[in-house]
Length: 154
Image 1 (cartoon, helix red, strand yellow):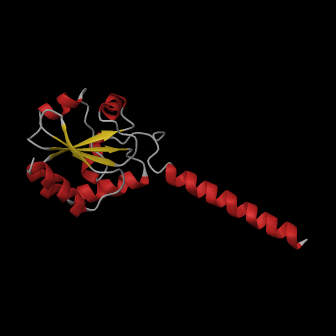
Image 2: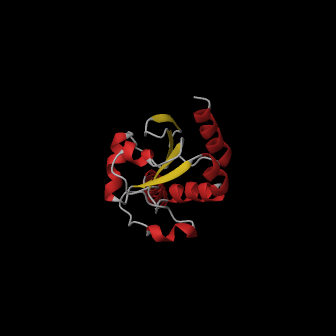
Image 3: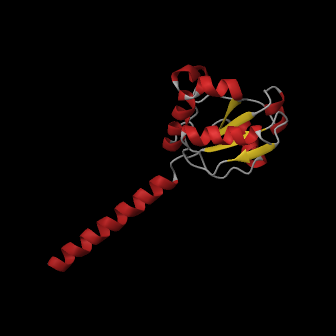
């Protein structure tokens, strides 16, 4: 009887670990619904509807911070909050563009820049040429500042 109880406990633990691992891997799932771009002032992700990497950057200042995200993914929401807190500082240095998995017009940007994991921050020049990118994941404000600074020295 005790062996059966221990086997069931072990099985429940394995199932829990599998579900937890699956949940972490899908933190920024592409199966979520899009966020209305009119809500950008509320901390939700903004939308860019340009058609190519060069088109995205042609209307921007010298440096462009491209934020690749799923607007409903937990880590992406965390990164968005950090960027929103830095909004005044960022607006003086770069133009931030939100590139979302949930906007069909944005999908070509993911393949153009080879984005495979989210959230990802990428610094590009005014023509859309990649200057530098950060490894995927939530980055603190200091790391974002360092990324921008590295683009100014190039």
